Image 1: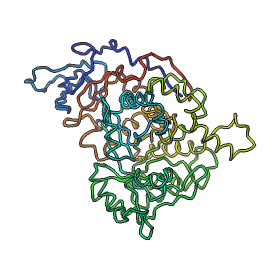
Image 2: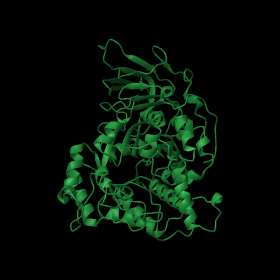
Image 3: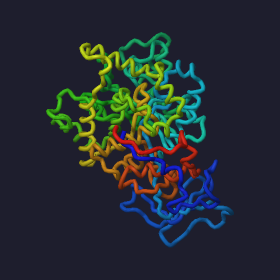
Image 4: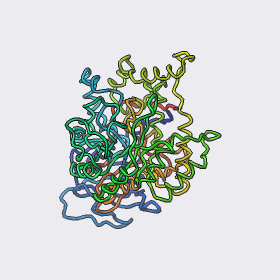
Length: 513
């Protein structure tokens, strides 16, 4: 992994950073005044320097130009943060996460290790905040699952999409019948298809499913075009008219529509059916590039349609590394991982029981490569990684609408650790040719606009929810700025990174992936 030390996160009395009343973190929102701060936000063409920001009742109440101050004078006590030398930015948004389970720990193993699981569930929301993510969107969830997630404190602002998968297709196929019909309540039954016993097909039409999602509080719809992977390639996929009906119903309800689509066939289908956001990069193509990282004419044609249609596009490059790193012997000992997850969970990952998913993937590889000695087997996704990086770079340089999402965790892998996975995704994007300034846009304003949350979050503007970061470096110049988070502000509540980190021990720089 390509990291530098984050020991700088913990001692922050230096660099001119002083809090009135000493070093602290609030337990609830208070009136705040941040003075002499440099504002870096996507709605501004250049930073606003030496500004003052006033926060009241969890929202940005005033932004004063240099040399002026217009915050209310009637408040008895205002906490002042002296921001000289610091940068104020919007809190980050990850628009593609899955929060229902602990990465790499299935339900049965969680029940067998309740103490490890409890520590992990308590820490994971803090880890997202530690890495600067004040808003998350779970792309396949339910009100019950989100309520469980929000039962911790502190926790990022969290929204969810309903997963409108085709009956018995992806991702329902991984859950045995009939439990899958309860676990995925928003599944679609196409006309002419026999419904499972006890299921009313009229409750699973596109219009009915979208209506239920909306009533349950979903802010978006997630659809799927996936024929399968590994040893499975014959999963049912939806008809085009089914997805067009989903899009019509969702748009009438004010909900954007995402589609799981990672191949040229799937992304063409998404474009043909009017999807708003393609929820993966272009990994798999029927026509293979002559050289790694080369865009074929067919790939370029798809990307040009994405650009012309202003379709959102999430690269989610770390999905691929999350599989490769199962075979990285140094992954679990990387000191950055101890900042993200409790040591008890990391230790469990290293046990034979915790290696279950690695062993399953290795067994599949052995079947496909019987002549290769098992100890030397490695999953090689260099081709798909080169494809998605080339595609992301093309979109970045041609005005594409990139959105920041990580698909954390993309599978039952421990190699997509919450929060840290997003930090790695940023480096993947830089490798692909996306600039740090574009990454800021992706993870703030573009995500907020794509999710129809831009009236609330995504920029530093009066009236917006005060989900903000105080950084020691300008993030438009380097993603390293996110390793210098001085404070996280969540709806006006100031959080100290030292209270969010899984381990308080300083770490040394590491290098390599």
